[in-house]
Length: 386
Image (cartoon, rainbow, N blue to C red; front, side, top):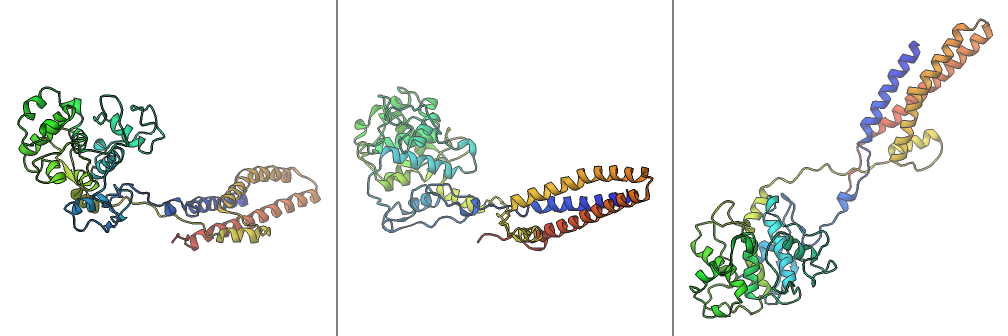
């Protein structure tokens, strides 16, 4: 029994060796091979993507386009941006949701969640539509973006009045939540100075009037300046004129917190978001490790099989051997020892003794081999993927 107790102590050491090494010999390459997809939010603390559009150097909206692009809002960050080109309603909503979530990256309660499936609110935006997740997601959040005919018209060009109305609805937390047609619209719209104010679609007037009023009366840090930043100093809104891609990008540079602008949190710009991201430590992740197969070489040598046994198989074999050593052998040893004690014939006692000693020495050698094999995972550092 003394020999048995000593052997079990060695087995315990072998078990610890197996448990400690199993965590260092795992294979994981998913994290190292995953590529960043266009429009994906930038990880806090990570290097910002380089934005180098070759056709924005001479336009007033350059700063806004570069900041928004650095947040990963656009589908590309190099080549031609086509700032004077038009933009569809669907594409603008995609940009809007991405910009909102990238700017409010550290505020989960202010992020708009893209829809993961039906039902679809707009019959002309089925789940198969490219921008369904963004359009349905912003509608699920309660922001007014459709028309009276209950459709979205995703492929129609975004106009000046639609841009302002959609953006203000998101900035202030929805149309019905704060505004009531007939009150703010009637009270403020007659005071607008645009020469073409009567051409603005009545459904969009409450949101646009509130936007103008907020920018005029909000204190420092509270105003959005969406109109001035997007269109500059204007005497006419030209409400039905298609908005350009540069104007759409500029409108997204400053995002409201989906509530009254006069209370916290105050609006946040893309430039502020970039500074906050750079100052936020990146989440610490354990680097992926790749099994170096040195332990398997030892196992193949011992087994004499010449097979390429991977880490999962080798760990299973180790576990099986430990079960045999910890459970099966002690039971067998107790039974054989009792037989040895009750045996009266000298030759029978010698036979039992030789059998017990042979098995114990064989298992001791097996434990030593197991320890040596598992120890290779400690003496050799796991290979890190480049």
